[in-house]
Image (cartoon, rainbow, N blue to C red; front, top):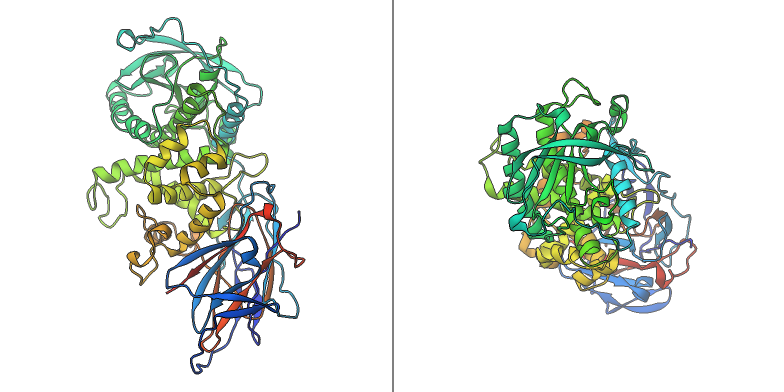
Length: 590
């Protein structure tokens, strides 16, 4: 289907000028000065291609999501009012790709403005070397992302087979005694065909929720004191935080605990020569351990993590400080995958969660780690600099997600948050957008929605809609407004309806902090990622966007002009089919 949307404004005299300054292609208008005239009474109806429609008069910071035949003629009260106009395609059957749109006055004539086209790559990277931002191809997929893809593909092939418990472990938790020395089968390749290494590992920490084993080949990588500190962190804080939020998951080996195996086999998944390009693997959960009774399945809940390797014996060099810092966010991310698979597939015999929602939930699990430390260290405690937004201990969990979500909002027309690009398991920018959507949903509906998303056989949109109590389109419409309506400078947060704001996070403050931290030279080119494109009176604009995302336009109706009329149609002027899920969110600005 070739589709597009056309929103038309009932103005003349002004022309739209399209420029390409950045990763967000920005539409500028040459409007000139507007001379104030006597107030014009807003009409009750306005014309849209000769058909009269009711004029909508929204209060400041009030929003509405319009769909169906409503988008073919939208009349908005004018006389100096300003709106954010946000078109979207939300249809469940739309394949991933670019769909055309047109925005113009239904009665306007003249040349259509230059077309904004999506890049051919599914992802982009924000870089800077000039005053204008640049849209460049994404860097190569990282080794960790590649492994994530392998894990999600193998989970998707799961069809209700659960691994039987290991005979050596009693099914009575009270009687279960962990083995001091145990041999594990560990995945040793990122190839499509799996292969395994036999790893002997010693139990170095036994907690009430976590058993930490260390490969005998790297027994000196950590001291006993370091492992005790690490084990206590996972045992007393991270595991309870995840299970309280998402559910308990499975326990097929009946020991009441999960195993944390630290082994250089994880380091060696990537050759040292590839690290500079693709990075390295920090850790993973492998559903094969829960869904297969074969000899290479460990038949238990296990997280595999890398070890310090300062001499680069097994792959690229890894300092102990970096490993200790990187493992907790990776662990909590993978633990959500473990719990999700246990709840969906093992306990309920359903399919594994769809990749886009599964990854979004795991990035939200990372934020749970941040919230744990934010609660422990209220400002200004726990901070190297008192003005820091987050304590030092929270930053590794939250800062990457802020960066990914910034990139998503910066180029929102490029990324879909309801599916992954073909052949991928969602870029980091897409994951950042999904995390932000789930944060919005959780702030609106309460933390209980996360557990309901995991403790179910439902997956994907059906799961999201069951928990949200409304269609995906309605949720995406409100979300698209909320990311701009939240924390508007000079406007009290209470002036924005609760349905259109974040309660846990202040987005403008967070992204401004990110800008201060990284700045233009490190890819964060402005304090707030969304810079609305100008919807120029009387102009025609065409462009392309993906389903499951949005573009944000700013429309100002000049003083003395009673109303503006907008229309969303495909590039050929025809209405979108209902299957496209075409809709327009309109937010009145103060």
